[in-house]
Image 1 (cartoon, rainbow, N blue to C red):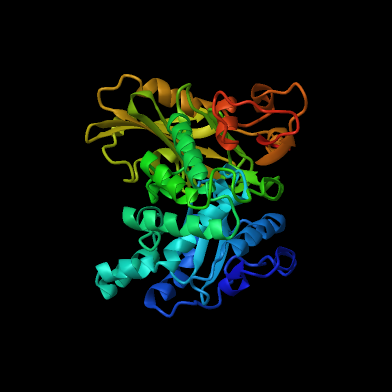
Image 2 (image 1 turned 90 degrees about the vertical axis):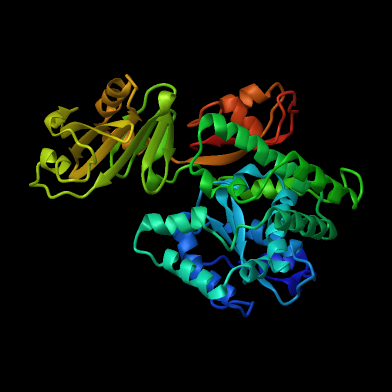
Length: 474
């Protein structure tokens, strides 16, 4: 979506009807700012798409985001063009790169509750661009050395290295605390002048705080890909945001445009994509690969593009992934091939797990003990690696439980697996938060998640006619 500051005063109906969703994820043809950082941002665009699951394509959603973005732009920098990309990631994040590249994940859109909150996020990121924070960052480091490091990291052959750049080193998107606060001030001023509710910024910061608390109990996807990894969030920051907002009047001033926002996100994909498989409670199921395994009670599964991991009591960790091995090679030979550090050669065993050829072994290294299970199924080889501190007595029980649960999904089971979506429903008379939350499927701690998604406190109540978000596979 290309949004220019000069479009600020274009009527909303013209703005929306003239918008054309992109057909290809990588369509950025030029960079507005004439700087090396902007050129680097352009080069980084496809890497960001790769790390965050590509562009999320939904014309209805894109039109809503484009409309909010166009109304958010102010005349402080009339020559700047902004390109907003919706990323196909469940993580809650938004960031900007020099040259007007703005990114918002579908996970963030699922957490927001009205157009004003979305506008606050967009305006905050635009604030970074308007204030030339990327250029200020450039001045702190030698440009050539910085550029060399970024290019080296981005162009590295290792997918892990590429992901690490975006996750831990998105230097163009990570700013100092003072710059974050400055972007807050610029953003709140922008949305206030655009007619949006200026208190939306503080409201969304509170929602993210609740999201963080929920995530710390339920486990997260990848915290390093989340907004709070690069954006400080404190009560003081929320208080400062509210003080900025009061310059426009008392709470209630400005437009929230909740109905239009909820209509835009209705049907939004929530959580994992079919290509990465699904986590349902303590079970991971992949319809494409046709396999499944479960973890014991108390373990939290984290599904990412690189691997599926799980953590549980006693610092025990589990990793699941797949490797390509010649069909004629035995699994016991593969375990002995050198990829397992500290392997106990005498522990290597050939086994059968739920009718599938398998091999298991033990290893130890640097205060840790490991159980290795390698399973051949459907022409693919899968690895289940379980790690525990050397003093732990639970490794064998956990590892046998996990590897013993590995199985091939039936055709019926694969067909029944469906992705989750955000659905906007209107409360009927007699319904409560509890009864609405009970309608959700595929998620744990339904009532807590319902409150987080709808920005409701434990003591809040819903009324007939209220529109709320739930998670469903329909």
